[in-house]
Image (cartoon, rainbow, N blue to C red; front, side, top):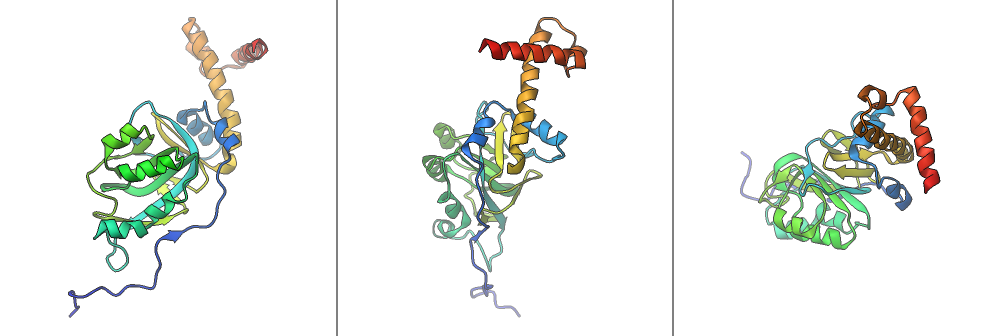
Length: 263
């Protein structure tokens, strides 16, 4: 018969887990995404062969917010009491990957959290969000829930999550396990250092090595869409300007040259 009265045997395993060193997306790259929407980035990535870039599930805590930043990652895993449990939260969580990742935050980082869409784990609360913001963090994307929503709104910190909960991070089913590791969020893979774009259409993950190609393609796309909107507002036919035909592409190129010359 198993003895359930004493402490469980503890495997020889050290937490938190930390991934390998990585390179953040640089400031010039991030600046290149300033005017690019998540929808345009997602569409351009699809055309380049990356078909799962959208993080399905998280929505903005405060509509109208937007963030572009370099991904720093946090992975939750299921609790197993011989390894990790949320009992005694105040004394346990400070030694987990959740506290550790916050000490690694640099200006412009977007914290991307794998939490399996859990409804019961408040992965980030007011105090941690304040600390993240103080260190220069740009925004947070959580494939799961947050707590202290009203206070986080007051901070003005851009956050995307699947909802809110009164629970703390390790109160029920998950435990902050690893950081600086690949994470799965809403059906998309996010590697540390990838570019994250999030707005009202949701978060999109741009592989860092593809970021400059996405910038070039997206800038052209958004410029011709601006031109097309103008022509449609003037009464032009949809089929001629969305998308552009070879003839209207020539018209757009002439319009773009004139705009550049005017500047």
